Length: 369
Ligand code: GLY
Ligand code: MN
Ligand code: MN
Image (cartoon, rainbow, N blue to C red; front, side, top):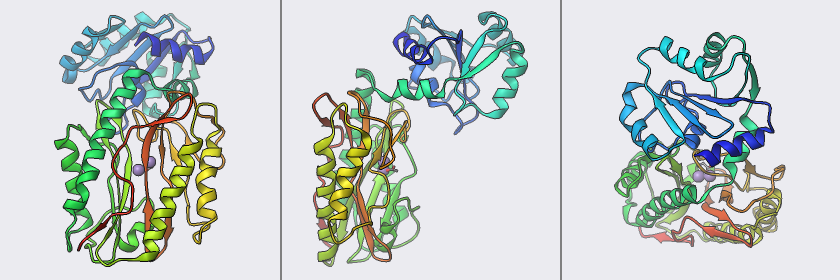
């Protein structure tokens, strides 16, 4: 992981002698800890990753994941693992590695206030700088190992998405469908869902970030399934929309318009293109349709160790796409009180275009009731 550590220090532009990442209690774990320390197993609550500008990394783990930590360190000669018996011992070991009065970079975006107060006591003469933008920018462009994991996470959700028409049954609840999707993701090799699964039936599908409930599936309903898998800590994020039973010509047309909007966005993706132009290409299609203004969110976001992994693509984005970025492309049209359609895929940006990570069919599918 020497290259990743160096990349962050480069983006910091000098001035910091060390970079210190600290995890609190799940779910307050800093995903950047795992960007530096490639341990696919282990929770690492309360652990510290201490990186120096030369690329060396020391991880202070607890005994709870000692085996996972040591296995990971064995594969990476730049990493040393310490398993201190007490927090006093840990603090003394950290102090030994950091010169007095050093400037230490912290991930302000993820470090808890409690941790910061402990660090001030642990390293009283230190100066602090914010590394969060440097870390975010370093993580934005993926290396080959990260892309391989993202691809695997995307294959898992694509396989589950192909199974959805066979799962849908009149009378099933949104909870039951969500449970099926999560169960199947793990059956296909995921370590768990990468965010709270969205399964929305009928009018509920008009709310993009709906929380599933006990609503039952009825004929004539549109269905939105938005779900993601973790594979070796890397996330996927896919949405597929279906129609159940009695045909609805308007929702079919909505689906075709969303698909057209997604294709328009994909057609402009390549390294160097401003993210807001990609959003604009999809918005233009929707705004030229009878559903002008019903695409109510940004087109997508970068994806990686977190499902929302850096920047959002919308009409205000300041970022431009770079080769190796992984992003979602997820236009939608939402008709309040009636239903919605969203189609979401994960892609990697290349010099001349993009490569799909997710692969499940996107076209309009009517599932017989
Ligand atoms: N799953 C939330 C999103 O698509 O951004
Ligand atoms: Mn999603
Ligand atoms: Mn998404």
